[in-house]
Image 1 (cartoon, protein in one colour):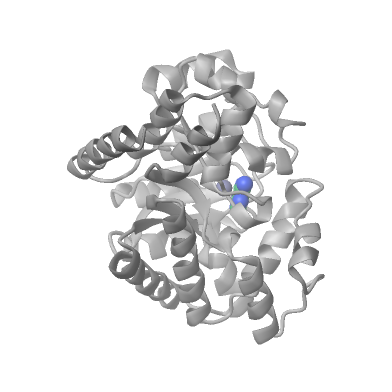
Image 2: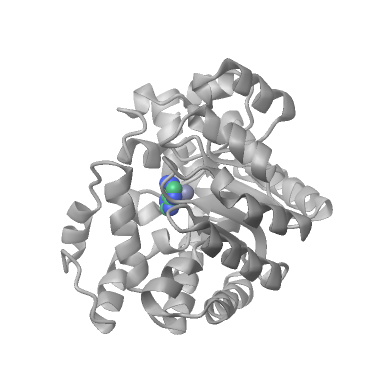
Amino acid sequence: MGKDDQKFITRIPKVELHVHLEGSVQPQTLLALARRNSVSLRYDTISGLRKWYSFRDFNHFLNIYLTISSCLRRAEDIELITREFLIGQAAQNIVYSEVTFTPYNQYVTSGLGFHEQMDAVNRGRAWGEKELGIRMGVIMDIPRHITSENGDLIAKWAIERFGDGIIAFGLGGPEIGNPPEKFRDAFDRVRAAGIPCILHAGETEGPSSIWSAIRIAGSRRIGHGVRAIEDRKLMEYLRDRQIPLEVCPTSNICLKIFPSMEKHCLPQLMESGLYVTINSDDPPMFNTTLTKELMIGWKTWNWDRTTIEHLVLNAVNATLLPEKGKKELQENFIQQFEQIR
Ligand code: ADE
Ligand code: ZN
């Protein structure tokens, strides 16, 4: 593969399934919001933020993530980051994204009401559809460090706004010591309301976390899921049912899940016939984008165009779009792949 292949990766249409809204704040916007909202950050330059985004481990990352969330204090901040997120997606030809959003963090640090936040996201979404012609849906998640009672509150929010921007319910944050079982009631409630669940699992915690995500919440896809590699039975289960994994390679290196890209288990997951999608997680925090993640696969594992097309179509077919919409998107993508090839 040469320059033409890089051009191919850049130009093809894409879908992204695992990307956090608050983890996508542009560095210059973060600096401006921190200043505007009187939050003092450790660094006040773009190059300083690059240093700040150098993580010792998951907990160190989470601390910084929560500090970023604490810079979002007004509804217009949420609308701004939604618009900028969509501009970044459109620049990569990502036509549809399923975006994780954790309003509870802003509710606690800024007192910003959930409905106000959701209205702001929806204004950003409507703007993106009109001005950029791209779409997004929100996976609202519980951050695992909170109490189960507060998890119930988030479930109530999700039920109130399901279908009005919210497409699914999730679980993120510190996996170790906070299993899905802690939020069993919340998951029971949202599932009874017909809301699909998509949980982070098998990132900093092992296979038991993935089993729980499936058993407790019926997780439709698994956020990360890379540690399934440690359990042969789980690998077979995921393969037989083709439960999609949302793999975020650079995130896993930045958070020390694997020591290097060469040691990442992604090739084994693919060779074992698991359903894999590629994602960016928190792009500016990991100095990446979905396009860069595909480039990394090409460089590290010699992915050819057919492999890249396959991974992109996997993402399309693992969306929560209605079957008809999925099929239309798939046909449109295949046509565009042929033209761009
Ligand atoms: N929130 C943002 N990024 C996350 C990740 N990689 N794992 C869990 N929670 C997160
Ligand atoms: Zn994530």
